[in-house]
Length: 90
Image 1 (cartoon, rainbow, N blue to C red):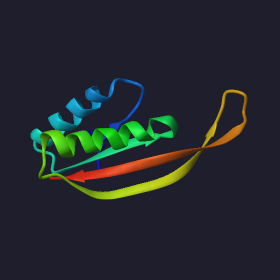
Image 2: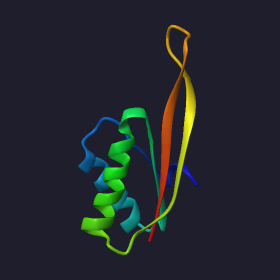
Image 3: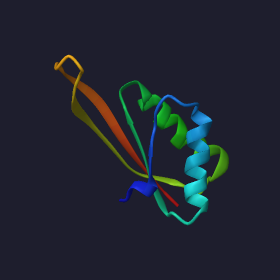
């Protein structure tokens, strides 16, 4: 897995990430990774499903990894944040 085949889901509109994923998949990548943390997890699932159902019906969800990451805030307090990594393959 390299940085070029990973899409980090954030606060942008969902279709921006769909377009990025389609660009990678049509550009020669056979597998991409959608990564999200916290409140953007549902958006990552939406991106995977939009790609799979509307644009490329031959795609498969290869793997879904969930976990928890510890982040330190500016005040120095630790907080646990859920994370997800969805592997999509042609």
